[in-house]
Amino acid sequence: MDKKDFQKISDWLWEIPKSFRKDMRVPARIYASERILEEVEEGAINQVVNVATLPGIVKYSLAMPDIHSGYGFCLHPNTKILTNLGFYLPIKNFQKIWNTQLLKTINFKLKKSTETSIQKFLKIKPKSKVFKIITKTGREIIATDDHPFYTSNGMLKINKLNPGNKIGIYSFEGVSHKKSSSKIIISESDIKKTLLKLGRKPGEVRFNQNLRALGERNLLPLTYNHPKLPYLLKIMGFVFGDGSMNFIGKRGDGIIHFSAKRKEDLEEIRKDIKKIGYTPSPIHRHDIKNTYINYCFCINASSLLMFFQTLGVPRGNRVFQSYRVPKWIFKAHLWQKRLFLASFFGAELRIPHRRKNRKTMFNCPVLTMNKAEELINNGKDFLNDIAKLLNEFKVKTIYINKRRRHISKRGRISWSLELVFSSKIQSLINLWTKVGFEYNRKRAFFANVAGQYLKLKNQVLREKERAIKFEIPQLLKTGLSYQKIANQLATPNPL
Image (cartoon, rainbow, N blue to C red; front, side, top):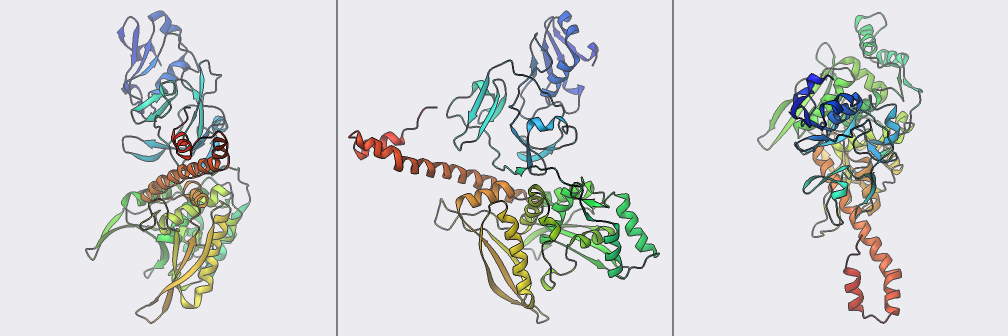
């Protein structure tokens, strides 16, 4: 950065225009004399520019004459930071990975969650006051007094907040991160076995082409710590739900197909497909019998189909074939299992909805799959696999229901199987705020709302329980009437 980059507003005010860097949302201003400006550390000026890139910042990023490295607001080292892959880490752990890890953020203009890279990582001892914010549901955050929070009145610094103010909450929490091992899931020899089963022979062009295609994308060997595994898990989960894959046409091209009701959800899948090195087709719109709209796209890549088949993804019509959750997924870390489940749920799990004529209760979530009559037991085994994975997140399921018999035009009989989830509050909170939904923005939004509502309800129930067990008996001993006790307990305590 050079002195010519500054625009002189007055003898005591200098501005770095918004055009200085593409990601700046507002200009950056520094109050200083020309002599002081020349002595300011470049790192400190970079920080003022970085602050100008933050979502929600209004008008200017400002720095005073005492500007120094470390200038700006800070969070406690143990503050949990949510990443784009649904796991969280303490902010102090980003010191070594800040330039490689993407974060989950909110785009306030578009009113949706998105992902973003980290611009800088700064670690300093705070020189200003430090506050602890405690929300009504018990969530806590520790930050310096100049840290901004999103409120009903826009971004406000923590020292401007008062008890009773509403602040923005992202209810989804995700799960903690653990470093994965270099243990191999599948290797080139496993792919060769799949090729042989499909009738491909060593030395044939298509045999070698598929191996070369996977090698060019650095997908082999695939290990638990492979950087592309998280995206593969998400894509796989969706294919188990609203996707399909098979060989078609005279040439037997491998086609993987994806469909959804909302175009924006498919766009997210396409982004992840590009991250693993493949090129998806454009998204196409279909009007189904003038009753509803569906969107779809595909990948024409035999190598990826064989890769997924080797990983345990079923090929062809899943209703009439036997399959289970791949065994290797059970050996993955919790945050990796979440990616598979969340994308599968984004395709298949019912959206949160309340019970009919019950304003404060939710229906049991239901996961449905169709299975041929002769494969009912296999379908139940698959749903039990899902239940076993969910149990690790402390999400409870209660039973598998068999209903709705269907006979195809060819006379084949299939049944609808339903995995019914528990409607207990904590189980639902864990489902919606720890597992959640991937590739389905609408379901993810309602899961966030429902999860936060249940956290608040849980807090109210705990307060009532505490009042019944401890506070009411003590107040009765003072001679107060039930009415006066009720009035006293109904009055919120000042923070």
